[in-house]
Length: 163
Image (tube, rainbow, N blue to C red):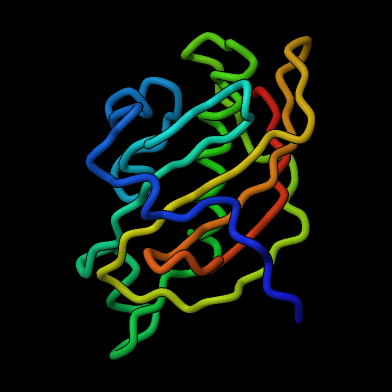
């Protein structure tokens, strides 16, 4: 299996240099409580077509006790959800959508899980929009979930649609 080239190096995007806070993320993404998977957006460059999000994985996460007892591993479905929430923010800004437009999952393709992640951990999400339309809000996005060491832990192509 070919190891993908990381879109970014996490060290180039320190978690304390925040572009968009969690409160600003929540104005565009409706997820709350256990399902809010984005702590901040660290970088957004629309000309470069690159977004970088950050997620702190804590030991007291709701899933940690049962997935898996004695060896908690960040579930793949939540890795995908984390990437999708960052992709939604990217699409909102790229398409200049109103804050209350909800971008929901349309499809998930080419998903690969490459590294097991256990809490505590700092995670970065980097991605690019491949196609998008403002007529009926839609986007196709490719992204990676990266570890602090710069390893690609997961990757996916995500399609989002305005609901």
